[in-house]
Image (cartoon, rainbow, N blue to C red):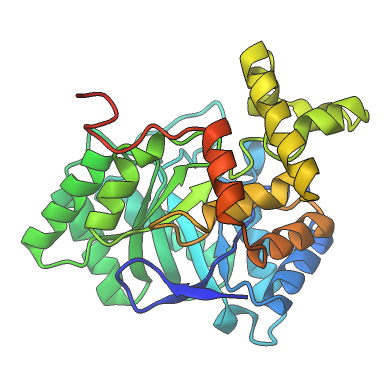
Amino acid sequence: MEYTQLGRTGLKVSRVVLGTMNFGPQTDEADSHAIMDAALDAGINFFDTANVYGWGENKGRTEEIIGSWFAQGGGRREKTVLATKVYGNMGVEGEPWPNEDKLSALNIRRAVDASLKRLGTDHIDLYQFHHVDRSTPWDEIWQAIDVLVQQGKILYAGSSNHAGWHIAQANEAARRRGSLGLVSEQCLYNLFERRAEMEVIPAAQEYGLGVIPWSPLHGGLLGGALRKEREGGGARSTSGRSADVLKNSAVRDQVQRYEDLLDKHGLEPGEVALAWLLTRPGVTGPIVGPRVAEQLDSAIRASELTLSEELLTSLDEIFPGTGPSPEAFAW
C-alpha cells in the first residue's frame, strides 16, 4: 500500500480510503469487522464514516460498529486514521428538534461528544463538515473547532460537498483567526462526473487540501454495469445513480465504449476507474465502500495498477473533462 500526506499536513494516509457507509444497513457487524481487519492487513489506515450512517432509525449504528471493532484492541485504533462527519440531523425520526443538525457551535459540540461515545475513542483524527451550512458564519464554526482541537477531541478539520468558493471562504476565515483551516475536501469525483475539476479541485490545491473522491464508480456505472446487466447481475448492479443515467442512450453508448476499451486491454472497469483517480492531481485517495470482502480485494488491486499514457488518453476521449474555470466556460 502506498501512502501520501493528507493535503498540506504531516499526516500520512493510505491512497485507498475505506468507506463504511454500508456497515449496518448492508453489512452486518461481524462481516464489517472482518472487512476492517482485512483493510488494516492490506495497509489501509484511513477509514471514513459519518454520524448519520446507519440511516433512519439506526443513525449512528455505523460508528457503533467501528467502536466495537476498536474495542477488540490489537492496535486497531492506534493504526487507524479515523474520519467522521457532522451536519445531518441526528434527532428522532419524525420528531425534529432545533439544534440537532448543521454546524452551529452547539451542534458541533454535542455531535463530537456523541460520535466519540459511539466510536469508543477519545479523539477523532479528521472531523469533516458533511455539507455547507449557509446559516452559520465561518467564525462561529472555527471557534467551535479551535476549542475541540485545544481539548484534544479532534486533530484536523475537513469539508465535504463544498464548492470551490466555500473552501476559499472557509480557509480565509481560518487564516484571520490563526487557525489551520480545512485540510481535506471530500467530493463527488470520478471518470464520468468530472465537474469538480472546474473549481473544487483547483481551490483544494491552492489551499493545500487533500481531495477525497466519493462514489468513484458513480454508483456502479463504471464498475462494468452493462456487462452485469447482460449477465443478470441483479437489480442492485443498475440501481440508483447508475440506473438513472443508463436510461440515456448517449450515456449507454459512452459506457459501452468504456467497457469495450478495457476488455481490449484485459482490465476490469471498476479497478481502472479507481486507478484513474489515483493519477489525478490533488487526489489523496478514493473512498471505497465494500459490502463484501471481495470488493475490498478489487480496490487493493486497483491501487497497484499502472495505467499507460495511451489508455489515459483513450479514457479522456470517452469521458472528457470540463477543464478548469474560467476556461471551461469562457473564451
